[in-house]
Amino acid sequence: MFNSVNNPFGRKIESSTSSDSNSRQREQQQEQKEKKFLEQEEPDEVKIGGRPVLTEDEIKYMVNEYIKKIKEEHENELKVIEKADKFLARFDVKKFMKQNPNLTAPDFYMVMYSETEYITN
Image (cartoon, rainbow, N blue to C red; front, side):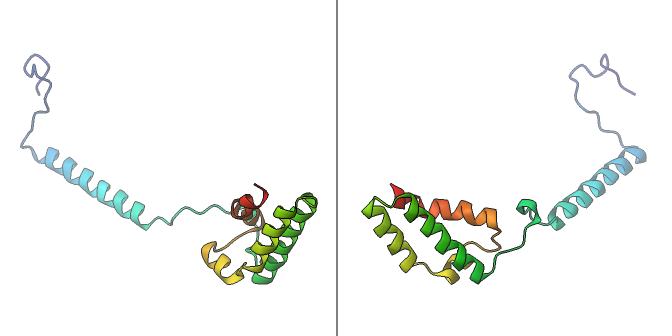
């Protein structure tokens, strides 16, 4: 209808035709559908290799083994061994599982590293 000669400012020219209002209505409906779809989408979760979630007994065992390994690596450093024993004495499995739900084995090792990093420093 209008070209750049008739519309020198490049602005959109509104038309009162019914086809234009229909297209706007279709666009709004499509946007609403997309919005609803995005709201219904499940939150992103990443599970490494689809591994099973660790149980309380498995976590207890793995913590003991992890601390034992730290103590073996630093057997000549008395302060490290004392810190490791102190960590193990006050370790609460239920609290740990509540803070870190649905842990898999690789997740466990990442969390334990960050929790026990101070022991070796």
